[in-house]
Amino acid sequence: MDWLNGLTHARTTGTAGILVTIIEVRGHSPRDAGAKMFVSTDTTSGSIGGGNMEATVIHSARTMLADGQTSMVESEFGLNEHARVEYGTQCCGGTVRVLLEPIGSRPTVAIFGAGHVGRELARILSRTEVILHLADSRRGILDDALAATLGEGPAVVHLHTLPAPETLIATLPYDAHVLILTHDHAEDLMLCDAALRRGGFAGIGVIGSSAKWARFRKKLAAEGHGEPAIDSIQCPIGAPDLTGKHPAAIAISVAADLMRVFQKAAP
Image 1 (tube, rainbow, N blue to C red):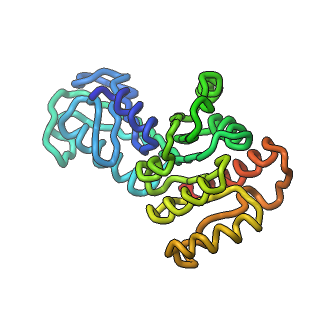
Image 2 (tube, rainbow, N blue to C red):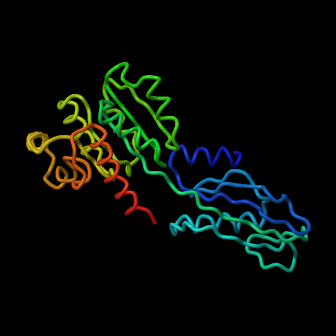
Image 3 (tube, rainbow, N blue to C red):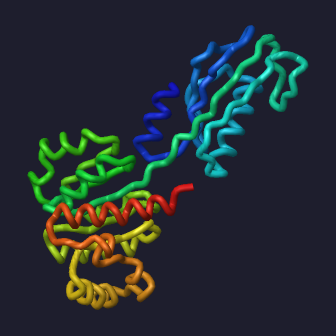
């Protein structure tokens, strides 16, 4: 796989990796300055010339990923029989300087419900570095105009028109943030139940009042969910210090609260 395909796949899926670039060559080298490869925890794409240099760089890149390192690193390699090696000798005769650049993972956010608040929230989050899923069970809600607007930002956006939106729950990564804002309280409750049964999410939030949440708590308990699981759902959603009932105000509050969560989770 070409390095650009590997990088694109990682950005699309939210996977962290290290972009490796040869930034200087003195003398002879298998690859020229500008050659790149992309390294993730379990795959590589592209090549900077193979041999000891490439194997050492891959090991260093995966160590950086394991340590959560976010700073760029430079390494220099002598390609001659006198250089210290671990993975075999390279006798090209040159010296190569390599830059290892961390490409961070992207959080995944799934918004269920593309009503007034859901659309506003999706617009805000599409301007951030996230993997964004927006799902609605109603036909025609996720139109071309909305898709074009959400596609203008850096987020990777997936739109889903699903008669049974709970099916999306099963496909989300375990560290996803699930936000439930549908037009139907029965659908909200079904999605809360599905998210709790799936488990492992970074967060589950549902829009609503304290009265709505009191009813939901009783119904979720009747479905067999324990108190700790029910308590893991946030309702109401948003930053407590940012209030307001206008859809945009609610969306800003929810996005701000989410950004705080992202900051805490970042290395």
